[in-house]
Image 1 (tube, rainbow, N blue to C red):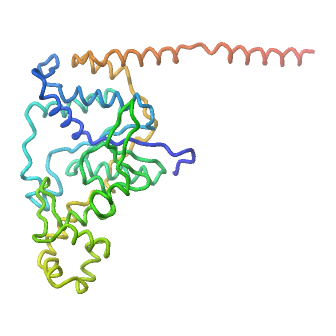
Image 2 (image 1 turned 45 degrees about the horizontal axis):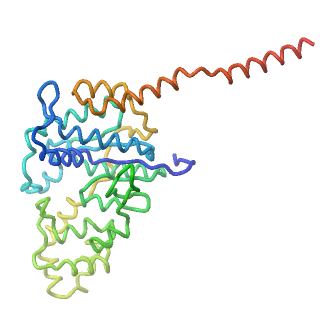
Image 3 (image 1 turned 120 degrees about the vertical axis):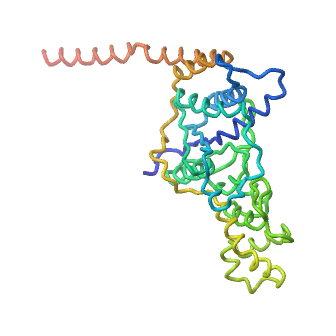
Length: 326
């Protein structure tokens, strides 16, 4: 069902991006924060602080977090060398990945993941559903693969602050940055490769050549339909590397139709009681003040007597009864 009121905006957060940012950003400190069990929570501190800030902005219909599961991936099944050169996750960060899920559950902030798929695929699916329902979507991630999700309804956040206006990457910015449309990001990656994902590009194919070809033909598949129109040396590269190019594109394409079950797109209602319980459990005293303040606001709303409305209704009924008696 398409929403019939004014468009609302959903914030999608790349959970591991935020955790890694918090983890490495806090390593400059002399000591790492730990909970009562001695487990590091330095990344969680930054994560919770950011979530707190985003909630306080008050501009989002809801906030949803996506995660990688980490137990294998369909892309690695197709291409075993996928992300093979990436460093292992630091030991201190591993337990925090589970704890942050506990936080989101306690605070009743929706989060999603799916076995064999990456967080980007989960994100792509939610973007697809949300946009079809008429929502706008903001994405908080540093992964350039998410550029392919940018559209008239979807933007990538580059800066969020309570004091400053958010900045975004929109369609025109993607074109300016990489030389092609958002939808062509997988096509460009299939030709140029991606060292961070250990995807091999086509040797001796210049970036400008790749973007000009995509600008003319749109997709890799269409390039092969017009292969005879390319200069001989370029056409040869496409023919010799066809299998790799098509595999690269498949790997680079974010999935958008996963079965994630029911996606909670209801207005965000944080469980501040659960939020506070989590903070106390992990000795995160820096945030308890804001949680207690929210709880006090909730209590005032819950127990505020509806005197005026109740009395007005009672008086109206009494007048009607008196009038009928006359």
